[in-house]
Amino acid sequence: MDKEQILEKFNTLRQWGSRGERAPHKPLLVLYAIGKLLRGEDRLISYKDDIEENIKNLLREFGPRRNSYYPHFPFWRLQNDGIWEVTDSEKVGLTDSKDAYVTDLRNYNVAGGFHETISKQLQNDSELTVDIIHSLLDAHFPASFHEDILQAVDIELPLQAFETRTRPSNFRINILRAYEYRCAICGFDVKLGDSPVALEASHIKWQKAGGPDEAVNGLALCSLHHKLFDRGAFTLSKQRHILVSDDAHGTTGFQEWLMDFHMKRIKLPQRRSYYPEEEFIGWHVREVFRGDYREL
Ligand SMILES: [Zn+2]
Image 1 (tube, rainbow, N blue to C red):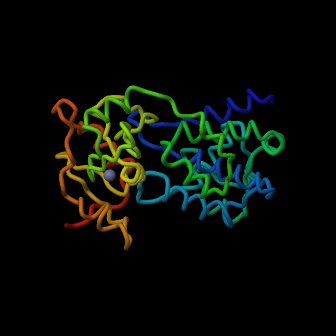
Image 2 (spheres, protein in one colour):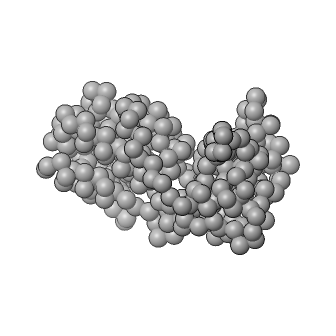
């Protein structure tokens, strides 16, 4: 396979649901396996001793909140994408939906990894590998996740790899104007000269999930609240009150920067027609928010 073909295979791992349900299973497993390859570890990774626990943790940290996490889905299904192989696959029993029985994966100590040729190409062509890493991150996660995910899978990228990737858009300026250049949560509005600093336009329903670049799907947030919002530490109610997750905790900063806003209304934009829409808030609650609401 040449470079383009390999890149294409990784690019087609997209699997957003029709209503924007998140499915970060395959991208997280692929990033995890790339991290191991780059560290020179074995190409084939044991399901029982390694992937099961580690991918579960990644899903818990970076995926939508679910009652259970199923690392065996991507482990098995990646075989259909032409990049991944599984040892002893003939011994593994299949369910009606053609997924592996987890007990078989454990009992036969099944391992999985990229095909040998692909592994070699990834190890020898760092440009290709960096491209794949970026395209997976870009396709599945907002920018505020990227560094945290890379840290979790132990991948170090050269800094300049990130810098060229921000696209200018009217969205940012429209949102900042709608919210009168201040954070919708804390009101932060520091400027350097005439320019706001550390003030960002965030999508409520991520662009990757089909969220539009419109005021009703945006919030002006300071860098801190942007990150906390994207990672699900708080969400909004239909009436646009701030709801903090019971998964979020801390000592210094937690009370002042998060809990003090719990149940308070956001600083609304200057026009009613800009108010965040229920549809997008609902998506954030389902797909991003972590844990349950705290009590007052
Ligand atoms: Zn803020």
